[in-house]
Image 1 (spheres, rainbow, N blue to C red):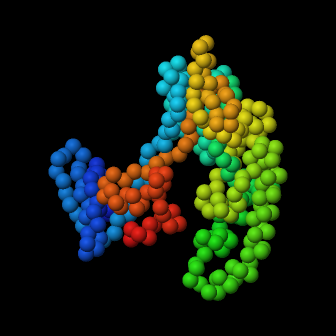
Image 2: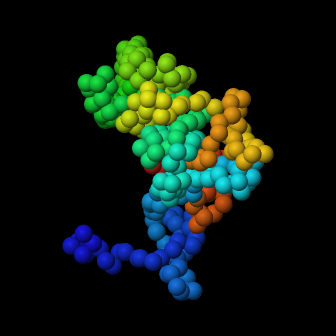
Image 3: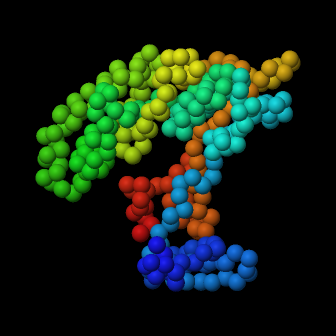
Length: 300
């Protein structure tokens, strides 16, 4: 593609952005360094697009007793390290998966196919999940992932449009009923009440580009008993005198586990930005502050 369109001259490979500063008269000054060289180059750009991805640094949680748990032979891995686990590490062992994201449910559903002796899916809160086919009939993308459906979400409407505001007020009861019916359908189809997994939040508050798709085989693994959902989080690790490894949950439950997989997400890191700009772009939880997941209005 690069050769066909003559883009070689615009590409700089093996080049690191060391620093990036806002220029008072407009634009940005980038300081770059070629790998294996001490030479530093400065270039001015009117606009900069940061496309470094969102999976930068694994968010790894540390709980009391964790070091002793590992010293006793227990394994604690981030979800990004799941493929590093050997089948022998999980075969006939009870595994605790921490988190309720798509990666957490994917791992939980896959673990029993690797011969795990049991899986506990521990999540702090319940979230809405969308099956590929709602009601086992309609593809979910035809209901939710369409440009025309944006009008249903208040956060995506244009607040400056008078006509749009009037139409929104008129359609509000219908939109409200639409979401309540969707919630009811998901509760019935997925059996959320049975598994005590009904979220407290409204689905329209979560569905905008954040709602996970149901992992195939997840609820079937609940039914078979291979995976057990638990609403709680880890409080501490314990190792008994006989070497038994225990994960103590905040709800008071103690789970005997040999392996813990933390599907706890990622934190963002842009070390080339000045500290004040990085704090403006990344919140305290390590997530980007972006409008429509693309632009921070304070950093034009």
